[in-house]
Length: 76
Image (cartoon, rainbow, N blue to C red; front, side, top):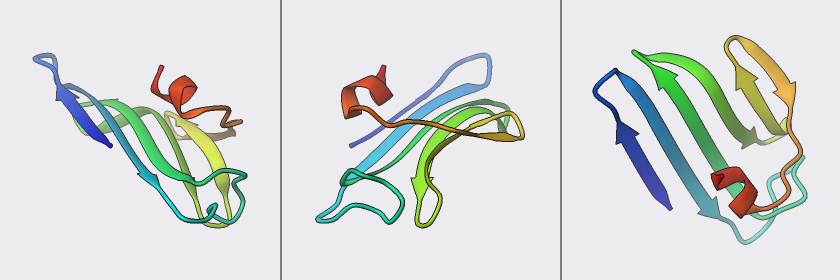
């Protein structure tokens, strides 16, 4: 799944999801994902997971825990 919307004010919403055969180490599900909102190249909020880190979110420059529940909840 891949969706991207760029608005007139320079803000960008993006969602990229891959369904994998096996869970990413550190995550209890089979999705690799990135959910992004930013403006003019600056990340305001991003949800993602990566090998070893698992599910987490970025708010500005801070990295915080995130508990992935369902793909539908991530999309919302």
